[in-house]
Structure formats: C-alpha cells, structure tokens
View 1 (cartoon, helix red, strand yellow):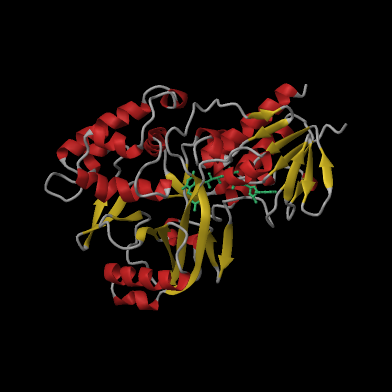
View 2 (cartoon, helix red, strand yellow):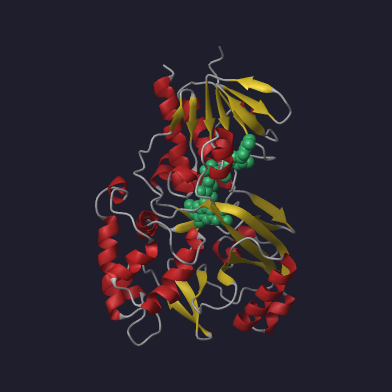
Length: 413
Ligand SMILES: Cc1cc2nc3c(=O)[nH]c(=O)nc-3n(C[C@H](O)[C@H](O)[C@H](O)COP(=O)(O)OP(=O)(O)OC[C@H]3O[C@@H](n4cnc5c(N)ncnc54)[C@H](O)[C@@H]3O)c2cc1C
C-alpha cells in the first residue's frame, strides 16, 4: 500500500497540512479543483490593478501565521489602525479603538462612543487579552450582539461602529456570530495590525506553495468521492492513499464525507473601481455608520499598498454584504451611494469588476466554536481541516491544517 497522504483542497488549510507533512518527510499529494491553489485567497490582475477576490486583510498577530510565514518577503503594508465612520453626512475618525480605547473613541460630545463606551471598551479589552487564546475559547458562548449589549455599550456605539466593523468581518450585520469569534477578533486587533502583502493577498498561500514540491500538487482536479483510503476524481481516475484529508470548504466537505453538513456559509460581494485620486488619502478602512444603503465598508487599497495600482491611479474596493444581488442594479445603487458620499467625481470612477462570493465564510452562530483542540479525525484513515472547523479566518485555516497533519503523523507511525 502507498504511504502517500491525499489532501483534497489547496486553500490555506490544505497547504499548511501539506507543509507539515512535507517537513516531517511524509509523502503527500494535494488535489484542488480550481486552476491554482489559494482557495478563497486569490488575487487577479485587471487593467494593471491587483484585485483580491473579495476584500480581506491579514492580521499580523495571527499566532500560526507568525510561526509559518516569512513576513519580510510578504512585504506587508499596514492599515492605519481604527476606521473612518460615515455618519450624518460626514466622516468621523476613530483612531485605534482596540489598543487605545480612551484616545480613540470620540468624547461624549461627538457622535461615536460615549465616555461609558470607552470604559466598557477598556474592560472588554482586558477580558479578551486575559489568559491564552485557548482560554478564550473555553469562555461561555453567546452571540456577539449579546456580549455587546451585556457589556453595556450604547446602541449608538453598536450601530455606528460595531455593526459595520464586525459585520464586515463576520459578513453578517446582525452580529449573531459566536462571542468566541468576537473575542478572538478583538484580541487579534488588539495585538497586531491589519495589513495586505504588497503583491496582493494571494501572496500568502503562494508563499506556502513555493515550499512544497510542485509535482505533489495537482490543480484542475476535482474529487467526487472518497472510498476507504482512496479518492475518486471527476475524470473517473481513482487514487489510493494511506490516509485522506478533506481540506475543502465546509459545505463541500460535508458532501464528500457524507456527514450531515455544516451550518452553511455567508456570502459577500465586492466591487472594484479605478479612479484618478482617492477622496480619502489615508490607508484606513471607511465604515458605513448610517445604517442606510448597500455599502458596508470601503477602502482604497492603493493607499495601503501603492503596488495595488497602476500609473499613480487609485483603486477603490467596496464591500456589500450578501451575495444574491443583480450585478448591474447593484453597481448602479453603489455608485449612487458613493456619489452621495464623495460627490460628482464618482461619475469618472471606472468599474473594473464585481466579485460575488456565495460562500465566503462558514456561518459561526453559537454553539459554533469548540475549544481549538477539536479532533480532526473523521473515521479511520479519514481526516478533515479547514476554517469551518476552527475560527473562520486565515489563522483558523492554517492551524486546522497543521493539526490534521499532526493527527495523521501520530496515527501512521
Ligand atoms: C471575501 C472574504 C473575506 C475574508 N476576509 C478575511 C479577513 O479579513 N481575515 C481573515 O483572516 N480571513 C478572511 N477570510 C477568510 C479566509 O480567507 C478563509 O478562512 C480561509 O482562506 C479558508 O481557507 P481554507 O483552506 O479553510 O478553505 P478554502 O480557501 O476555501 O480552500 C478550499 C479548497 O478546496 C478546493 N475544493 C473544494 N472542493 C473540492 C473538490 N471536490 N475537489 C478538489 N478540491 C476541492 C477549493 O477549490 C479550494 O481551493 C475571508 C474570506 C473571504 C472569501
């Protein structure tokens, strides 16, 4: 029997799994249905601009990323901490609510964040930084919204800041996502920076892939079934392995494993525009605090990393929650809202592309997140990893991939 381990899926989970096996000298074969590895982290070049497939950021504090990635060669470009919030027809700056709540939030005389909110932010900060990350996952679980309300934040603070900020991370505006995910996100923002690699987000999975032997990665290869320790491909070919690791998205994993399925996923839509000059020049996230219109957040990636642009022109990335929109209608409405925010100059912005991503993140409603040391063994010889089994994040995907590899290494001595 072959000793080769088969990994289905070459997103960050599958790649980190392969890397750990490779480091341990274990043979593997990674199969991915797409035309390249990277999974949900891909970057396209369009008209000389770098377009990530959906707006996303890399948090430098992710512990697994610190262990695995070479940050210097990623040439990370940092966002300014905090955000600018659109509210009442104006833009308001929040400096760094996660690390410096007292300086960051407006005073009681400004529209975002009262004095009480600052105090609550300080106490929440101490609580999410307390103990290890694993300790955070052992805390009682409720929804993010319940935690915010129980902590006593004002409804204004929730609606104007938390809802668009966290809604843009969880990709759902109700903030029904597990409080453990909120603790995790708060902790990561409190201990590091949001960034993008100069060459686009895809540079992250690409860096891992370059450490793996090319001949052990097969793209354009869809797996349609698992039988024992073998996988069946769409082409009809059957490949035997000593173990099979399913590193696909949650829904695809449920199909392949014949399990009852996951809780499903949440979708998002991202529109990109090319423009002469960004109306906000700082490398910062802009949130919609008005609770009106389709835009959740916007950013000008070229202000964070000029390499995302071309010939001194700027790029705008607009995030709309949900994925079922009619694209032409959506573009018209988004342009209308952008015009209200930035004026008639928006007429000159060139729409480059719209990405509709039906499954961007696994839904993480409570009870969702067990302690991170959840077992990755599905049945003898079959394992699973991916962000749906950990926090729905780059960190979650990376760590779950490594843990699946370690379980295989432990079992196949
Ligand atoms: C728009 C968007 C914004 C995000 N924002 C952030 C953010 O700001 N910060 C953050 O940390 N995370 C963010 N994330 C989440 C992060 O990108 C994911 O958690 C992570 O990339 C998931 O990696 P994965 O390996 O678990 O899954 P995936 O990347 O989905 O990889 C699964 C792979 O399996 C392959 N596959 C599926 N079925 C088959 C099959 N039958 N046969 C062979 N191959 C198959 C797929 O082609 C894919 O390559 C965001 C995600 C999206 C989409």
